[in-house]
Length: 109
Image (cartoon, rainbow, N blue to C red; front, side, top):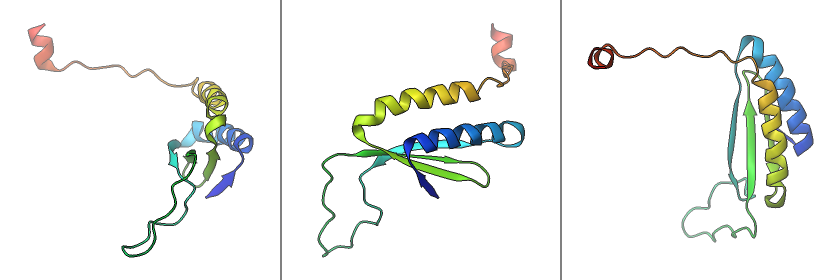
């Protein structure tokens, strides 16, 4: 997995969305990140220190490409604004799915 800066991540995400548009899909996950990249220690060992500030770990994954970035607490609002613009621009070709009613509901109504 490649850890990128926030700006590099957004530009790579745009390219990833364009390449996934024709033949595949991509997923984006967001979770709380405390700065520890090791598992919790076993019983008897001293626990990991609590962070002063939590961060966001954002990952994007396509078939063969993996991207990630860490966003600090004070930069989240700015990052999410640009992130939403990237997603809106890459989702313009979505198809509307036609919903089919169940036969039981159609018979009642």
